[in-house]
Image (cartoon, rainbow, N blue to C red; front, side, top):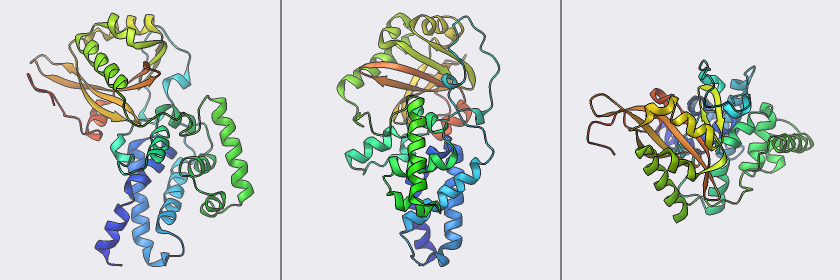
Length: 328
């Protein structure tokens, strides 16, 4: 196979490999690094591949081993809700934790294929939800790999055993333990919720109301869209809030600086998301946070404000600034 054709063939697998590495690592940036290393290793070793197995399986073997190497000795990534009890709107924000502490978001377009059939689309979307990615972090790396390969990618036990150089009974045992751990942390198997990957009219109306109330900064109206037990998180800070009273109290207190903000829609982790731009002195708007919303049964159940706009906005292709009088 010529070098150009090989490059093109390997590149066709980048999206699905990125999804696999993201589920393993919990970071879009680390997933990109892992996929690049996978493709480099595959390119260097392609003359020894000789078609002994399907190219896709071979690439997943390399990618899984790259991720397992990267995970050695690392602490798990988490969400604020996994680290401490809910705080209050009057509580201190505290010091920011390093990027490596958090499950990081990923753009849908990096990992979700528009050509996937509806059943595959549901599983793919559910398996990149922030809550599911965070739950995966509780699993030891090899158990994590087994669960992803078996439950998300639907590989047979024998195929997973071959990839991991282990036995079928070992794979089945690891899968059973992984399922039990996910259940302990309240996580469903990927696709078990049966939610449609498509946004229905009710969903669109809810998002339109959210954007309207947030940009008008009508917090009284905004919290009517939010379930009373909803969580609000603000990585890289450990503080998180639960419920209407504390969410509204925060937005009208410390968060008052968000008044006058604009939201630019995007999509992250199988969920609606927005680039959140703060008002600037010249009348324009500067990047502030990536918002991701959890929605269930017609209500917002989670508001996640990732404050690392400097790194996340370029990742999501969001404008570096909104000039006065303009928006995408």
